[in-house]
Length: 88
Image (cartoon, rainbow, N blue to C red; front, side, top):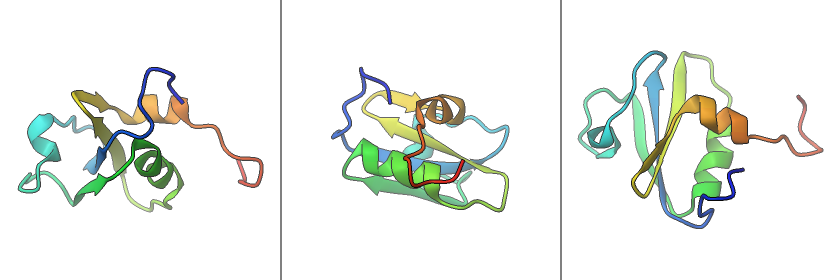
């Protein structure tokens, strides 16, 4: 995971249709484009682990907001390192 990211910082996770890009308003509870969320997490690492390990059957992609930073799905995938007991 990224060294410059505070793993203990609160985070908000949203799921958007592939091709959509959220703005900061997307991470508020009344956001209209969301099917799932926003989900508030007490720590970034918990939101990240959930986003990377939840089984998905649709075209929804995770976006995580931490502080003033919105992390796109591509960057989240780049941070992901499966644990030894997970299948690749």
